[in-house]
Amino acid sequence: MKVHNLSTVTEFILMGITDRPELQAPLFALFLLIYVVSLVGNLGMVFLTSVDSRLQTPMYFLLRHLALTDLGYSTAVGPKMLENFLVDENRISYYSCATQLAFFLVFIACELFVLSAMSYDRYVAICNPLLYTITMSPRVCHILVAIPYVYCIAVSLLITIKIFTSYFCGYNVISHFYCDSLPLLSLLCSDTQEIQVIMLLLAAFNLLSSLLIVLVSYLLILVTILKMNSAEGRHKAFSTCASHLTVVVVFYGTLIFMYVQPKSCHSFDTDKVASIFYTLVIPMLNPLIYSLRNKDVKSALQRAWSTYVSFLKACIQCEF
Image (cartoon, rainbow, N blue to C red; front, side):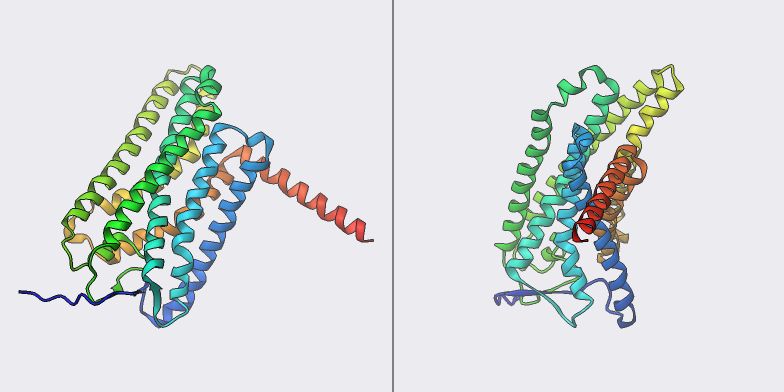
């Protein structure tokens, strides 16, 4: 009979991305730059869509929440990951680990449903433009984000509580750069079958249900666009979806890669690479995609910059 050491675990050690000393400094600089760009970009998107009068539409309301979810899960992971490059042993307390996991799960799951809500918004705008303001009323928009937040909080708490009320063995080294559910499961001495089934069912439901909404929305959009007689109209319709479609392909593509790869090829190293991409790189790319490909956002940035420059000039003139 196998005897497990059930000594109380009070902290965990995060292995980080690499143990090669020569890579620590360049990787720290790279990921610090990525995180800062992500932080500035998403905070800027939240600010612009909140204060600019021309961005007070359902699409930009949802874009603001996309930026908030990006900001949420990248901040849950990023600072602790960067700390790993600066210390010999990156320790995280038991409750901090549980908190990090809970926040990460909330925001990463919310992003799925915010993206599906944005797909529905584009469907209504292109397929039913005359009913757009009625269908996508402020009340509907708030419901489209409130329900996912409540649901994702409940899911996050369920998984976090299930894991952290189980028995951990004496071994407390997590083979990852943050407290993720799968590496934590490998440290449990108690039976993990129930937790694994719950996680699999919830992950499948979240991914497939949100992806189904995205696919159906874009299928109907494509049918509508193909029926348009005007080439200019088709181009305009495609351009309104381009930014969102790019974000969807990148985000869902990364998640699908993680879940559908063969078991023989599956390892914590490949998970780390995929995790780096969707926890740090995607939150950096999203505001860049929307600011570079969206005329309204670029115009709002120019107006905000002009206002800022005018304010600075006024302050300088007041001093003299």
